[in-house]
Length: 431
Ligand SMILES: Cc1cc2nc3c(=O)[nH]c(=O)nc-3n(C[C@H](O)[C@H](O)[C@H](O)COP(=O)(O)O)c2cc1C
Image 1 (cartoon, helix red, strand yellow):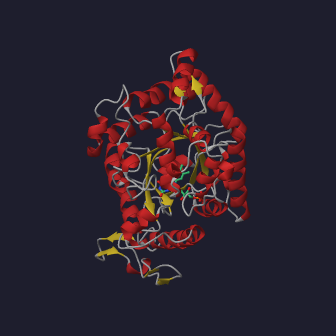
Image 2 (cartoon, helix red, strand yellow):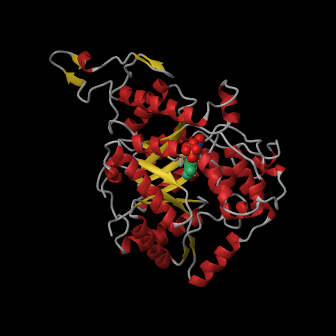
Image 3 (cartoon, helix red, strand yellow):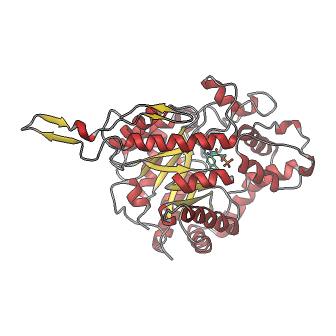
């Protein structure tokens, strides 16, 4: 069994603040220290990357009110991950740092410049999570009444990624000549104007800085609809997927790989990472008891689950009685289509769907040794690439993974014990 990759899916937002092991992070996280400490712990465990998701709204999709979003700290408060990235880069040496930025809100030239700068100052360790955004509430913060339609957003994103890539290429790798004798710093013949005038974007170029160390930062994507999978197959170096069972994971990975082959890409050039939250204990019994507590639905957990789904679909799930049969719902979204579809498949009533989606990423329960074993078996079944942990970035939970589970994975030869390369993509494509 070849090794697999590890990442962590989080954001620049509040760690859980009111559970028994929360410490002071609920108040202190806006300073960034907690995220720095967290990322250092991941680097000690040789993770490929930390992925920082983002959105730009306070959601009032649930009950038509900001109450649930703010009460539970779901979509806000949230800081800009692009601004956190240099702090994380300065505090680490090898781990990849992926920041989310939206093709619906950034102008391409600005994004290309910003991520090229980040790639330089991180010495080639930056990734961009390409999102099209999903909420009209976010669009309204950027001068629009509503987002473009779902498939049109992906069409715009295709053009956006193409233009940004050409901006990164607008300086040839050897444009910076530093020729003392001739007194030439940059060879102007190696810097090229684009004059791009496309359907959605226009930019003249060139960029005003040298080519990023990785050529282009690592591109990350998470969109499960057929259109989203095509986009990933064309553009992504790594894809995030949230699926509950190993057969679905295998089907998803095989599908994205087949789409890559169909357009002439080597499928090994994109790593598909499955989101998971292990439940760890000192003994099997302790872990099972913990998982039981996590899985037990409460009113708060159901509200949080529904408010999440409302935020990304902009369907008001508070409007339905919890016992409403899913079959009676006629709901559609211009937002996360695959997330809504999978939510609706999860149970026969609104309550069941909310509970199932809350437990969706609890694949592995046990001691570090037994969870390492289970993760290896799942990867074997799926065919590869890796896992992206998610959940509580408080010190206690993170320590359980980095100081307990990862060493157990390493002892089995399942994950790396040292970085081979300096740059993010090179480490990602190493196996
Ligand atoms: C695990 C995961 C993480 C995501 N992270 C973000 C994010 O940070 N910001 C964002 O706007 N959308 C995010 N999305 C949404 C996707 O980028 C995509 O827009 C959404 O899944 C809808 O695509 P689809 O209709 O193709 O499934 C995420 C989706 C998933 C499944």
